[in-house]
Image 1 (cartoon, rainbow, N blue to C red):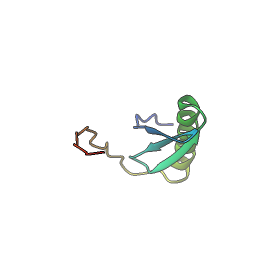
Image 2: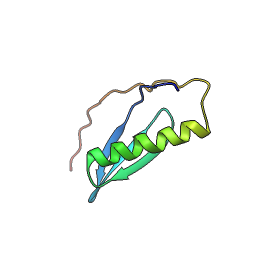
Image 3: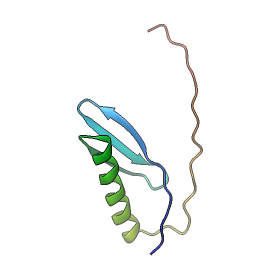
Image 4: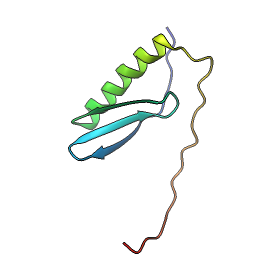
Length: 70
């Protein structure tokens, strides 16, 4: 059983948190950040058991700034 270090990107939508793993494309949600992450970990683990990838590439993560009149 292989252990992988993956990325989780989380954001809030109304009263739920959404968690996404960009390397695999899995998405989950929860009422708290911890619940959303736990659900993502479980779902991603199950997905990888069924569809093991040959290689997982790490995404390039950065931040940027925009100016808005709003």
